[in-house]
Image 1 (tube, rainbow, N blue to C red):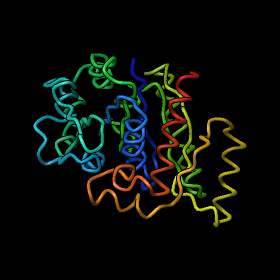
Image 2 (cartoon, helix red, strand yellow; image 1 turned 30 degrees about the horizontal axis):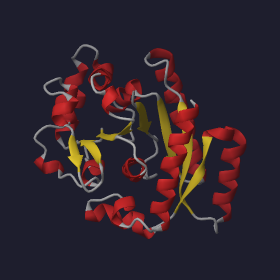
Image 3 (cartoon, helix red, strand yellow; image 1 turned 135 degrees about the horizontal axis):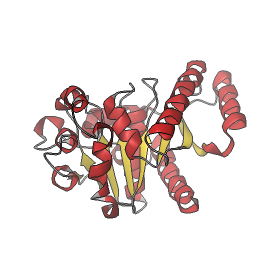
Image 4 (cartoon, helix red, strand yellow; image 1 turned 90 degrees about the horizontal axis):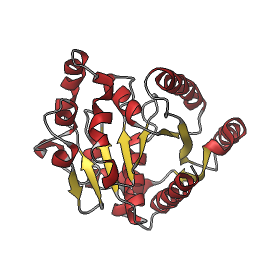
Length: 256
């Protein structure tokens, strides 16, 4: 039975997509069966997984409107070692179309129930806004992985996200919880980042993952080659950190 996780943060530019594709590649590297779902109409996670969003015959849009199943729409990214349920601009239209439909918040959850035994991990890359797409992701998930930079404004964004998760937990998905906070783009030379990191650990305790993802040029370059950093340059510091994070995730899930 797959464990389903949203990668979410209501603050933009914190590395959600980078985290999603590199964690997916890291989990595949340590022997897990992985499906990555792109819920963002920009389709960056799709392109960053070696799949051309412009050539998708079927996408997550078709799954949400129940005109295709996930088995029909998911594509194996052979370079990356995991399956991709891709997104493109069509998905922006789903926002409007879903409003009038029954069970609109739980369309993705219903589709995932059919393939839950096919994978060990299902990772959902959510858009930064709290939209119907994000709600579909949160309703489907067992938990949320929160990538965040150790900066002052990141703490404010975290407060908003925690409130959103509480609302979804109370009204739509009793299983939903924060699995952990992942410190990304971390530079230990910056005193403020060290201070915020310590604040996170003192406030959230073991909800903060032990693995820290360093600021790394190779991770930033990888999307322009249509690959996760873990595949693009496996020996880079950031790539090694994501593989370590994948191992930590597997261990954490075994204890749940």
